[in-house]
Length: 109
Image (cartoon, rainbow, N blue to C red):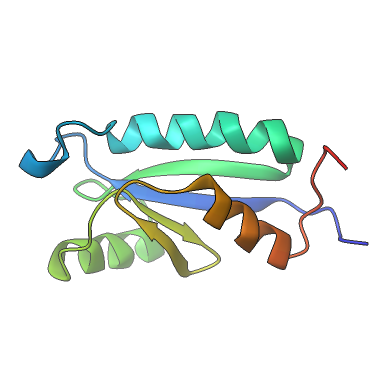
């Protein structure tokens, strides 16, 4: 049986879309979509946090935002427990697999 704990998913991105990303939702819209979709499956045990790479708050967030920019990662970059889970257009299936691996219990169970 998995434990019930709150997991934070960080979505790093920028307000401005990259030229090749015009057909995708913005990073903020992606974070909102992830929060809604994940809440349906896992309830309130998951919190999704949008972090603007050009205006991060906090030391850890600033360091990772710098990495996104310097390594030219495709954003949004989805991070769970310091692990990059997705770049660009994230897939729910992959995120669910990571949450299941962490022992997060689905509210659908």
